[in-house]
Image 1 (cartoon, rainbow, N blue to C red):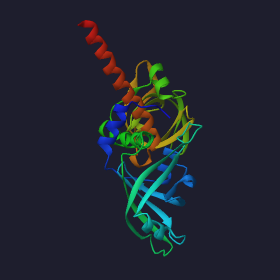
Image 2 (cartoon, rainbow, N blue to C red; image 1 turned 135 degrees about the horizontal axis):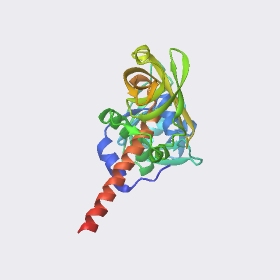
Image 3 (cartoon, rainbow, N blue to C red; image 1 turned 135 degrees about the vertical axis):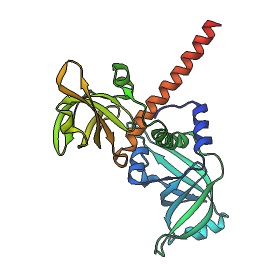
Image 4 (tube, helix red, strand yellow; image 1 turned 90 degrees about the vertical axis):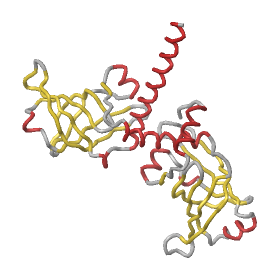
Length: 280
């Protein structure tokens, strides 16, 4: 897991403190939440639970109450510790910690008489590891909307920073794979160069394959060709802008782009500061 500065973690905490994240299947995969290792600790006893939502100020969890949990909560005045366990993608070690909390409410989950949903409020700011893991997702989601048109040209340096394996890839057009070359990427789409005639490709639905390393991942992102340009000196080639279908853009793809863009901004600020000092 990347090591963020305390300043960046504080920014995450202040900016996204009240935003709830729902632990969908995709969210569990992105964060590496080890669902079998999540428990409520009440007194000296542990109860398995499922995290439904979480923020930096609290969480909602689902747990079985037929094992005496409600009585135990009454004995501890509703104070608990929520045990989280993560293994972020690409990491070999797990990150485990407890967050002190108090139960504000407990209601039946669905129509079950055996399971309750518990609303927890955290007693203190959660550990930095939790803020980093959740904050990266929230930051990527916000910036993917704010900066969706920012294009990243796929220079050798940018490919290294993004861990993109190659600009040579394929795009499926109406189910038929066609070879192409990636020229730039953004949250909202890509630019590709391929053989073809623009008028036969514009407005066609397509899906682009993008391969990443560290960790190794491949995405097939759906979209539509919405613009075309001539390729100078290559009459048989065409440059096409593919706009993604937002519903099919993986969150982990957004995180990769956001990490790269925010790192570049930080590096630029450092370089600018150094130049100002040198010029003083």
